[in-house]
Amino acid sequence: ALSGLTFDEENDRNRSMEKPDQDQPGRKASDLNPNLVVAPSRAYRHLFTKMRDINTPPSDFFHYAKRAMRLLAEEAIAELPSQRNVEVMTPCGPAPGVEINTANVCAVSIIRAGDSLLEAVRECLLGVKTGKILIQRNEESKEKEPKLFYSKMPPGVDKMDILLCDPMLATGGSAKMAILTLVTKYNVDPARIVFANMICCPE
Image (cartoon, rainbow, N blue to C red):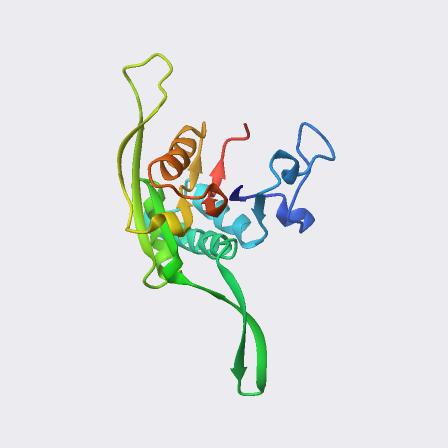
C-alpha cells in the first residue's frame, strides 16, 4: 500500500486526476498501481516551463522550483493516513474540517534531491519530525544495485505516517531500497508510507 504523487503535464488538457497511457489508449495511471495519485494542479505546467527553459537564470529557477515543491508537499500531506474529521467554530458558526496530527508524521528525505522537498514539507507542517536515508549505487558490482550507506530516524517512527521525499525518480532503485529500509530496519507499516515524487522516467 504505497501512495505516490507525481506531476502529469496532461492535467492541463484534460483537467483529470488521471490520463491514458500513451502506449495503451484508455489506460489510466491507476491501472499501473491503484495507490498512484497524480497531483491535479494546473500550476505545474507553468512552473515546469520556467524550470526547463535554458534562459531562466539560476535565481529564478530556484524561485519556481520552490513553488513547485510547495505544491507537491501540500498534495502529499493531503494523502497522509493519519487524518481525522473535526468541527471548528468560525465567526459564522460551526464548520466541518480535517485535522492532521503532525506529531504522528515523519518526513524522510532520500539524500540529496529529497532535501529540497523535505524543506517544503517542513514549511507546511511546523515541527514535523524528520529522517534521512542515504543510498548510492554500488559501483563495484556489475548490476550497480542501490546500496544503503546511512539512515537515521526519530524514536517511535514505527508508529508514524511516513512522507518519503524524492522529487526525481529514474530506475526506482533508491526508492525501493528506502522503503525496504523503513519496513525492515524500522518496522514501519508500508501502508503508512506516502512516496512524494515530482518527475520520473516514463518506464
